[in-house]
Image 1 (tube, helix red, strand yellow):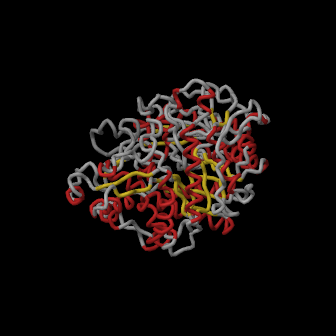
Image 2 (spheres, one colour):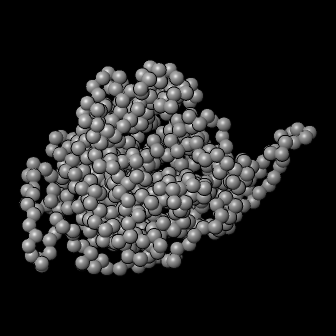
Image 3 (spheres, helix red, strand yellow):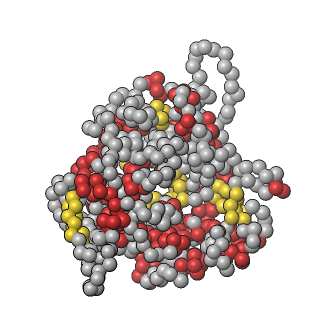
Length: 592
């Protein structure tokens, strides 16, 4: 791949502050001669001067372009599009349908300050891959890796939200959505990840934020949702290197200063547990690094904690206390398969190597859980006392993308045999998983399965109250600093086989996803009634999108999009109405 060849030479890439239009901004790279009489083929001096168009052409190649490449003016949402499906609404004609009345539970209610909305992410929805000065990201390159994406699709166009954002926001407002949470594209604002700022990107996001406010929808911003600028990845390894810390903090400063006067809820990074575990990246498509594969996620995690904590403090100095800044955890609720002590230990290690990996440093100690610390001490440097102090307390509330639950148990070979064997496939967490109850409990699955493209997801909403209480008891209540409760910052469901359906009305009546939202919202209400401080929630996703390695094959959207031409009308699915119905019934303005 061109990126491996070119960026092996880029010692000084993107460190300049070159000015000019986004297309003409340039980076210069060189490789040092190794001083030997007969230089190796990989070591001769080579000077490169690449503008942004060169970077796209050499590292990515041809990019698809949408039919609509100017900002789309919103169209009024027809009143007929706002009629909920049965059983939320029944037409007065024809008559004859009868359904039992489900009474409102008077012991449930959302607090008056409970916030709710929907979420999306830049790379998954924006499209406009090269437009108006955007630089390539790691995911632009990953979509060119043969068979890395299930349907070999790209996000070059996706939902074309970059030009359709006014339409999308108006449709959210028509349904009464309170918050729209979206991410910024780092490589759109800083095409090379650092260096020159792309003013067209600043202008675009300013207008997006202003459009939200115009429609009465609160904008909420995530700085980073997996789309690392490709230049930074191929220069020093992206999140594998602590070199990314000052680059991310500077990017965060630019965003806080540009948009902080209108945005009060911020997330620094989304799901570091996931994007760190995506390392190592596919060989021969990115610059190679000598860090052993199994250690790469933890080098990434160390950089993330340093970058997040420093960005948090920069943000607080700019925004003050009127804004909230945090990051987003993720993972399912972890249930011991049996009541054995071995399964209990496996569950604890699973928490440690998942949520605890990032939550313990931020909320409890400033450092890793003991089991993680024991593992990484052989190859990661210790945090300094100053870094620990900076990491601890660098979050204003506990945000978790809490989709599901599953069972955990000790490896078949035993916990000790795994912990002592670095070649064991479950090492270092040494926790095995299943979605079915034990044979003694009938061997039933924990809940209905999602689309086969999302095998990690089952409808396990029965476990949500316990999950939320666990987060509060483990990280919020013991935290030495003031943490303003627990927020579910993503939850949603991939309707089985929706991507293969062709009849629009079948697609829109997404029965399992609808049931998921109904039961999940009741579970949140139950948790609140039982004393868990749940402060808000964001449903994923407000629209069908590019679902990473699943491409467009697996769908999470509460609105349908025709990806052959994303400028065609979007359509609300039944699940959207079910989600907002919870707030109509149990919100501060809910009816009797």
